Length: 526
Image 1: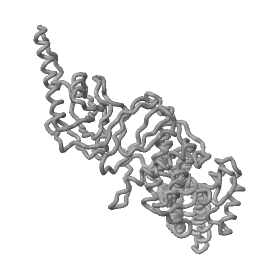
Image 2 (image 1 turned 90 degrees about the vertical axis):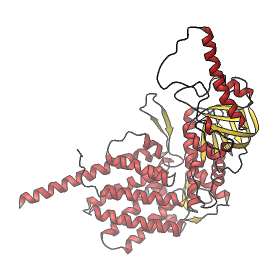
Image 3 (image 1 turned 180 degrees about the vertical axis):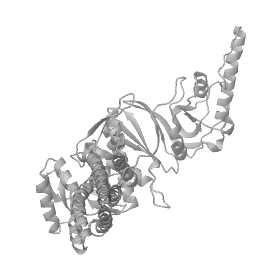
């Protein structure tokens, strides 16, 4: 009998150790990104392990975690949690991990009080459902998509916590206009694949612009003096090479006579000229050529023929951009000259090469009936340019969230404190151990305002206590104003975020925590 009891106690001990190990690993990840939360959050410098030792400077939770080398399986779950939030809402990737870490700390204290992990997981799920209900009914403010000011406020709030926060007045209108121009008329949905973000080093982020059309960062191929501007353009997109063909096998040709050499060169010219004439016959006056990895996509002979025919040429088009280009220009990519016909050409009002401080770019504008846009990001260096791209992506996701779910909630920790108060009252109506767990869930949500205050250099205990007091007196929109270092009505300060971001952060964090709590053993597979 005593042997049986020893066996059970060892089992319990092992289960406890595994659970503690999982919670410690997950909390370590949450503590890493916690200092990056909010407008006054710190940035992280990440050195990648690639051969070129690339450096990334960012405070975007999803990017930090994606680049981190994580070994522990539970820590990997936190990385996946951040990526799930990025897919669902696009913003709040740091908040979701911080909330999950706080819920796990609360769970640890509950387990120490001999409350079973299954009980905690069930109570947390109940609390999360109630929290989303409270957000929808008590905190959320409906939004009209025609009210551009509210959309700009939400985009600015997202950008204000980024490295590029001082440029939010430039980037926010670009992001709002970009998303509003690609809303599908039938379904009312937004596909962010219809927005192409193009990066070009040079100038500052102030010079970032929105283009209703296409942008190519490589300039035109005018070695042979071809045109650099074409009006009423007929655009062809080709995936075959305008150079002499190569045999399938590696071999060499030996010519022992200069006349044979001349004949050989003439044949190459005739072959290329024939293809160029077929292209011109379709009425094409702008040619986009996909980059080739096997041989030169174009050579000097073909560029000379195309220049003589007054055809503007853009070479080195990436394979990954072909689908977007075809969709924008309403043209079809052609894999061989036989399939290159008039019907497969796209059209545009103007194709023009422009000179910028970072080199030449090609703009394609005035495309009829297009459902896509391009954002040209500028920046003085590659680090700033990459961070600008990530920040613009987050702001686009925020506007997409508002199109999907037309409600906003105040920022500055206001919804979390309101949820904490209302869930604490709800816990009193629930009996038994569940009441303790729901109260712990409510207190865990206070980590967001606490961290915001801490990162802003304020006294977190004083700020959170005052905030709790203001909300208890019915000021539902009172939040932490990190700029003034005080508590103000956060709606008047224009700090707004989509309801979808807060809802998905709570539901995804709770889901991950429940999954971690239910793990009682780690088994190594063969």
